[in-house]
Image 1 (cartoon, rainbow, N blue to C red):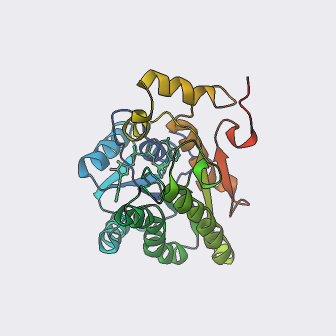
Image 2 (spheres, protein in one colour):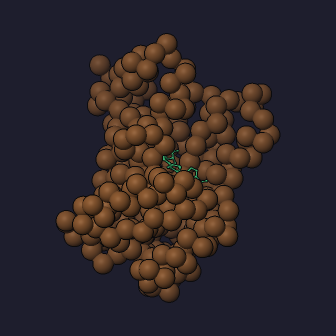
Length: 267
Ligand SMILES: NC(=O)c1ccc[n+]([C@@H]2O[C@H](COP(=O)([O-])OP(=O)(O)OC[C@H]3O[C@@H](n4cnc5c(N)ncnc54)[C@H](O)[C@@H]3O)[C@@H](O)[C@H]2O)c1
């Protein structure tokens, strides 16, 4: 066990994975624990939260599994109360929950559009509302929001609601960073590029002739020649949450293999 987050308590919303293997939130929760943090693994699906917490416990770390829904303020408040009862403080808030809704304004229903706002942006609002007062009581903390390269680039799919809500997460992060800078809370966000996580096999594989075609097309479009893994996101989140990043706030960091730098494919 390393010690970059020793003595800190983290709450990770969306700490499960939508399929077998490693999603971003699950890897972040485990990576936080490997660096010595006590980790509250929160997920709408109790079994997903429990699976991640069990991995942490199995490695000798300290974890608490909590079922909560980030679209429901009361549920989030109950999760935060459980973390405080168990660990006494919250130093790190990690907002991972987010989802794409395929379609432009013509194809999207009003309900799906509102649901995207409620989940992708509303989760950051609600979890920040619940956690920040306790961070302030504890003398500060670090917030890491998971945005997307889609916040600043077209990523090849008609993701009207996702583009708009992830762009909002970026600037909400800047707003949080500035509002709380003098009170010891830092806020940054990570913009994952094209990732190889269980999520993509559920959400977008239908866009291609085969899964192999999708994987090859995504990898080839990245300057570094591969998709990112959940560990690329987890390593970045550990750094931003740690005191190593104590002079970094308000940053929206692409973790994208260079994709945001290139107009044409790099060969
Ligand atoms: N995987 C990618 O290719 C990619 C690329 C860019 C950005 N992202 C962002 O990464 C984040 C998710 O990545 P992941 O790999 O962890 O996804 P994932 O789907 O594997 O895991 C997300 C977890 O959140 C939980 N969840 C869903 N709705 C919830 C709710 N209302 N309340 C509480 N928990 C809920 C799910 O049960 C799941 O366990 C999202 O914000 C997404 O926009 C992913």
